[in-house]
Length: 351
Image 1: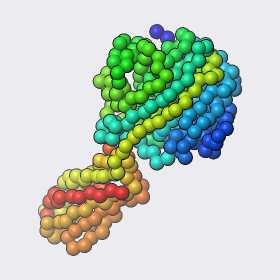
Image 2 (image 1 turned 90 degrees about the horizontal axis):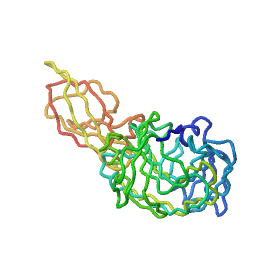
Image 3 (image 1 turned 30 degrees about the vertical axis):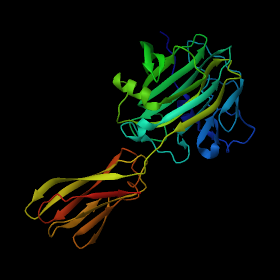
Image 4 (image 1 turned 180 degrees about the horizontal axis):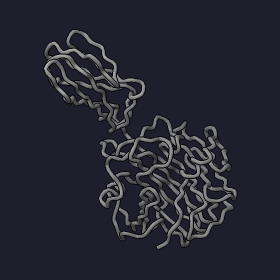
């Protein structure tokens, strides 16, 4: 068993801020510590992410990935790596790919997310090739995720081992065999190490996540915030490359449901809360809840929504601050109503 400090890419990047480069051209080279470049029109982002050494590292960016062209750092293999140069889909400290919204792990769309990578390895140095898949209890786009970090080691060279300790061997996931490691560094770190290296990999993200859930290291209520693929070099690393990278995430438009709950009642009125849930695959831009009172009920006050009325029909609309509800997330509003207590049927629409 070996321990290493897991201040991954994210941690130091937060402290000093990301250096964002323009969209990658035919010959973009990133040498600044946290420099990034968008590829494929912002569908993915490449990051140099040299967080564990002051020695220079450079990566040559292509439209489909990157190659490490310089890596001068040398760290002991019983400690932290020098960097995690990688390409990602999602959000890394508020640096997000186009249109991304965190996806809740109990949503239907989450189970459809697949990824592929084509990798080039070298025979020297101390390094690993790994996916880094992040989850957070909230639908956050910035800061350090505190849920789970799922690492999928597709190959490695030299003595480096995952953070924590080995908890299982010979586990079959997505048709391949892995050893499983677990540690906690303020968040759960679950590493799946292939017993046989592979340069071309593809899998469904939930294949690994459901194993982590079963082991008690992750929860279905958490949100996927990014899928990253790259390398952790301790020394060497020049020539390692992500040749191709893709994430296929077929998401459904935002849809919603609304539930009406009576609270306090009295002879001439009542209070009620309405919970709005996004049941679609992308975040809402706005939402509306509509119902018709069965009698002479009227709203005397409402909060966290605006009310419009036509006869007995009421439409409650989102406010600026609660209009965006992530996939699988909830928000709500409340009201004080004059008239007999009732539970009307609600319809919810989202855009």
